[in-house]
Image (cartoon, rainbow, N blue to C red):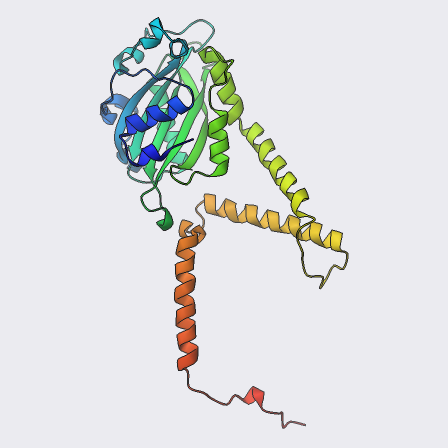
Length: 316
């Protein structure tokens, strides 16, 4: 999956290219940026999250028309058309998904992405909204590499019949996808989102995407991969036998400790409990180099002194 276009091209073009790689030809009739505040109207909040939006684009909708090669597949939709209350929806639920893309001045948190996703979903009465967000990286080694996130929400009818509209449910987020050095895990998920050959309408595609992005499925896959790596590594690692003499017990115990500690370190990184730069290899190598140079200089310039602990003890 090639995401490098997010670093060089217009966000509309880069987003359209991404969905083309997923096997989806989107159908917006405008590549111009939209006024975010006017678009969200009463759902716009004057805070740092919303004010960090630079450009907003309507990328198009994914409905049955995008699966047709001729005729209706050539239809282009305007933002005003798809937001109209009379825009199509059948009795069995949604038959489309609206896509917006926007650029931010800084890296958002999951809470901020959820807030933006809920706001954009509230302006659409007839179909759910998915967001594609682009923003700069915060790691020094990544330079100006753009990061992207994908967000989609579940929507439910209100239980109270007198309430109009719908309730925005759980927000599903695929966060911080590097566009030059894409993580292998993100690559696998994006490739899984590619439209399968047997999918011929929106509902089939939507069901496929929900399965790919389902947290329970991803968690099972994650722990299965960890288990597979554990059994592979158990016969290859070596640990000191200073405490446990049984090699099998020693390797199994210490390997589990290693895995749990790595997961914990990753957790505190993702929760921003420590500076992200501490996990940047290039940045750390610079710190280590400066430290070693300073330490070496201190040692070689320190005047020699005869230390007492080197002398034989005179105490009886």
